[in-house]
Amino acid sequence: MLIAFNKPFNVLCQFTDSSQPPRATLAGFGLPPDVYAAGRLDYDSEGLLLLTDDGRLAHRLTDPRHKEDKTYWVQVEGTPGDEQLQALRRGVQLNDGPTLPARVERLETPTLWERTPPVRFRKTVPDAWLAITLREGRNRQVRRMTAAVGLPTLRLVRVAMGPHGLDGLQPGEWRTLR
Image 1: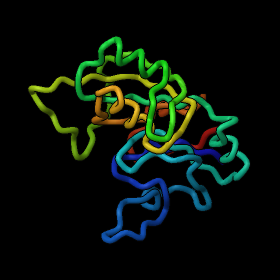
Image 2: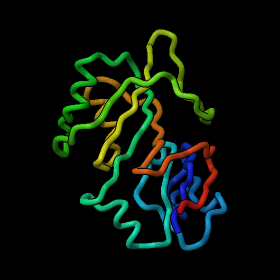
Image 3: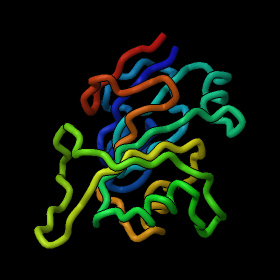
């Protein structure tokens, strides 16, 4: 079984949480029993999360040798210049080593669901949207990459993993894939 789930903002990619007070988890969304996340999506990120009950499939989806493209829509603080975009495309140096090159394009403001709480709006600080596609999956990689080029991430939404996309799923909704 393979499931596409639109993970809401501030939800953990696991079914339990031992912190006090407990945070929202996948347990609150009526997902089938015995599925688990194939990969991670940060607590403060939103969008496509694939879940499966098949360990071999989960391994294939997450193993670095088989990693599929992951596409994110990223709202950044500031106006991206050509030099910043080129740096992301070449790969940037992070504290755990250089990243692989990424596909990066400017993006018109996408039509997305309202986020709760909303992204802080500041009249004096412009923001912009980028579509960033990676093959890696390091911890908080997109946020660290944009910060490294002077464009802090305000909102991060994963819209696709390989051939699988959100395709109209609203936050908290899921569907079984073939």
